[in-house]
Image (cartoon, rainbow, N blue to C red; front, side, top):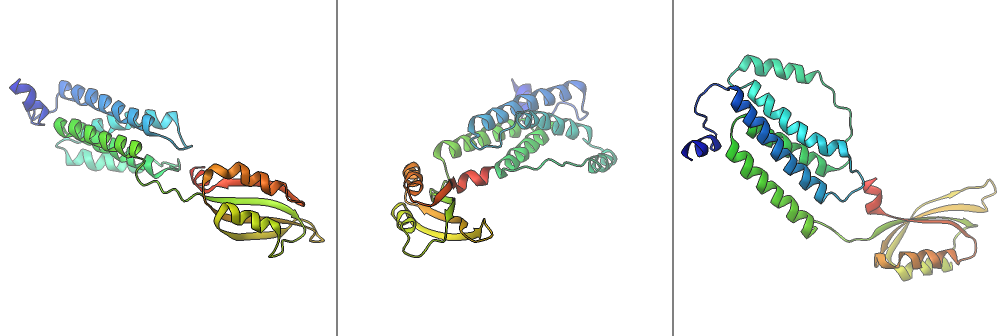
Length: 231
């Protein structure tokens, strides 16, 4: 038992990195990488989900652990490895800032496993996962502003006392005209775009129904701003 805690605390019995130490680091990084990947899978709720990214969290954790074992105690190898890694170009665009956070967590866990700081790796992974699950369940930071974009075509121009504006006032706190473009040479057909601050998101269908009833309105579309940010 004393030997087990000695290894867990990151003080191996021998200073040299042997095969069993590398194997232990790789196995632990594999397990902890899976824990992190499962938390990502459980807490993910945006539109940018990718199976390859989830698998990459595990691979990155193990690869960083192997890198740390490779450069252990050798400055020359560390410099050479930095030069080799600098030749790799990553062209994938990460849309969600939260994905970058998980990548950073995978790097840190792999570094702890590869440097034989097993206690830090285990306790750190559990602590990070608990915080990530809490933020997901509590929906921390969510701001229900119900901002939306309304687009439609209209036969003619909208005057200040037009019934369409009165309809939007009933369902919104504020609305702002973003653009109005003529879709015909004679100017009889206009394309309008409004930014809305809705009172509640439950009456979206009713708002669209009321606008479609107005004579001269065509091609009505309503998009919530949160959905645009996730695409």
